[in-house]
Image (tube, rainbow, N blue to C red; front, side, top):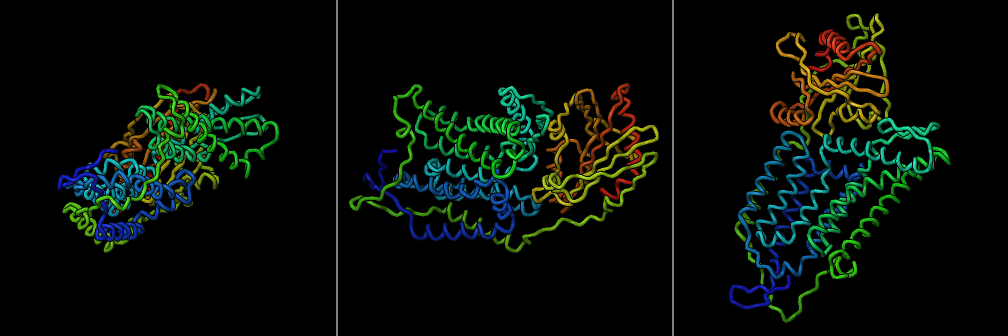
Length: 533
């Protein structure tokens, strides 16, 4: 933006600087906002940055965003800010999200509300013309917010399956015999499981952030910049799949130590650096296409602002009423947060522990099982039941119940629909089914019904989410009820109930339906003591 701006007196080459009053008020207001919000949910986002590799880049984003805004200093100095009342409206939207998140203890609302409120504050002070110049740096802040669990789980499961398939393709290029079952790569002497940590999420989010920053500085046609940003997704998937394939080859020739410890982590760093290299190479190629042949160093417009010379005319920016109004709104919101408890505990629900669950249900005799600790660390449940029940006809029903005392702190139920393909099982049939005659019979039990197959083996799965007297079959509808119940009942406890029965060669899925329905009717006598309605 090289054109000069004509000021109110008709003079050109006028530059604008912020008043001390604005700098002090904005700094104090922002600092107070962070301090007040930190115990109410902002701190959980920061903890996520340090505890999970997928979001470890988040700690750098506020600093990068601030640098990008500072980098626009020379352009912003030429714009006479007018302020906008729309900023007050945006701040109100952000404030409502923050208050709803605080009341419901769903911190994701607080995280997004925080960024939206900051954007509204800038809009109230700068107006639309000024905000346009820093829109990308502000948008960058959204990439520091961890995704809701239900979304990240779906993405992770999908990436695991894609990475496993492509990784096996790479292994077969070396004439190595390999068999794939879901996300388990069987090399014969050793099995590689592409778990959540190997899904590629730890590269995807940082590389998408890097791609957005690169596209921002990339001074070429708009479609090329969009292409650079979006290409970070397939680049991550392909390179992570290549990494998995290489690990498989190394394990085949040099043993399983190649897939563990330092080498495993070092290979991850190599892959991320390779992804970055591919991104830079892509930008170099795009700069040559349909352009003027400029080198990458010229089209990558990273410039630093310069100081104003002594002979220019500098004016102090006025502060609009819209800015002071948004300041008052923010102070009122912070006052409300200060007087409300930072830790709002869910209502405690009286229930029996699954350790006391009966092993005899009707004609079914149970044999308890256990879940390995590595999976419990991922599931983050509060109590669980895993039992194989068998009747006198040697028919088997596996019962799994995962209970969550609270789902408001980021812990969320893992849906079997996303997890089943990871074990190699293919979903042949999927539908919802209503079962009548359960409990007092006042309302039918609605369940998800999945017919699954692995080779010649077939199983029928029923599962649903039980929450406060509701049988819920949709994962996203469950999220709505978590929010609504947190807001109105101050409790978010719930459970996943899943039943699996294997089919004999001479059985149909309808035979398995009858078996599971009969078992559920027997189970209903005990369920409410352990998963209260």
